[in-house]
Image 1 (spheres, rainbow, N blue to C red):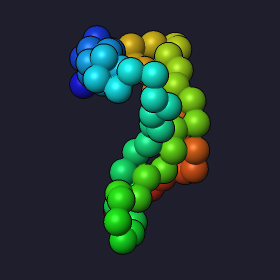
Image 2 (tube, one colour):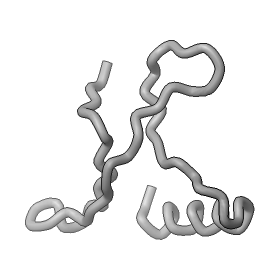
Image 3 (cartoon, one colour):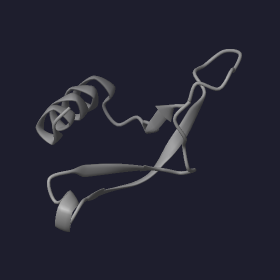
Image 4 (tube, one colour):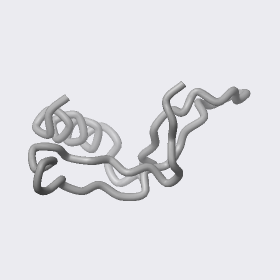
Length: 66
């Protein structure tokens, strides 16, 4: 996904949801009854130096690949 595609998705979501507070989270695959278990997003930032072409979404807690 590119940053432009992400912006478009966010803009479309904001049009549909209006002024509601919308949580930003990453599904983490943990078993949970009911809603999807997520790790909340702590911050976002643009990379620099070797990562200058990457926009990072930083989770609240470290996540690991299974």
